[in-house]
Amino acid sequence: MPPLPTIVLVHGAWADGSSWSAVIERLQADGYQVIAPQFPLTSLAENVARLRQVLARQNGPLLVAGHSYGGQIITALGTDAPGVVGLVYIAAFGLDEGESIGALLSQGPVTPALAHLIIDQQGFAWLPEDDFVNHFAADVDPVKAKVMYAVQQPLSATALQDVMGVPAWKALPSWYLVADGDQAIPPDAERLFAQRMGATTVEVPTNHVAMVSHPEDVVQLIETAAQATHSEV
Image (cartoon, rainbow, N blue to C red; front, side, top):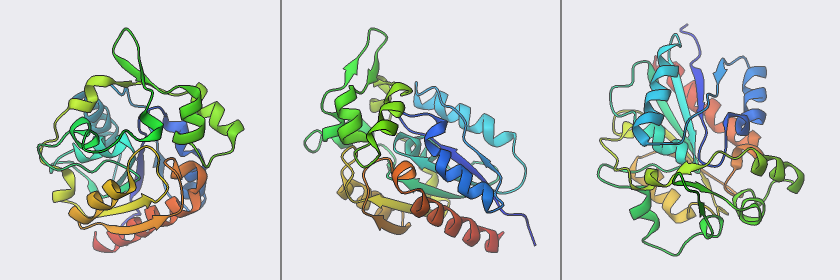
């Protein structure tokens, strides 16, 4: 029997690899090799280069999961990601060719989590504490949410204009967790992403950071994907 895939977890904007902690603990307990690297959150090309650097260090099949902007990163792997056997999206962007996050978000009202972005002198966007705690991490214990706020990594504002090339989901099986109470990415947009990519989809009553507030649901979807890709290897 071939080995189980290694799980590579890709964090999104205003987060870091530690946002996956509860998921990592559960996956490791179930026998999976897991890695959750840090991303610069600069240009899409630089984020994808970091992911490819990490993927190149692994052996065997790889299952890549992305949260929020992390979905943009895994999608931009394109159709030539060696070793990758599947993609898992956790309340994440899953754009098609020619689309950008900024253009997509401009089609509707600004979501509560993103309503008051602070752009610093270097052109990076930060979330203010009130929006982070009450909207971005709305269903997380406030004490933990404030810790997450303290370690937030800003996103380069230019990343919102990066245009997607041929998406990886055109070539790989995909799974999608829709956060039906998401206040950062509109849930209807998440449903559209999942439908377009033909993803195996679950809907969870959670806010944006599902891997923190509902780690069991996230682990269940990742392990479902891992088992499905394992049987096909």
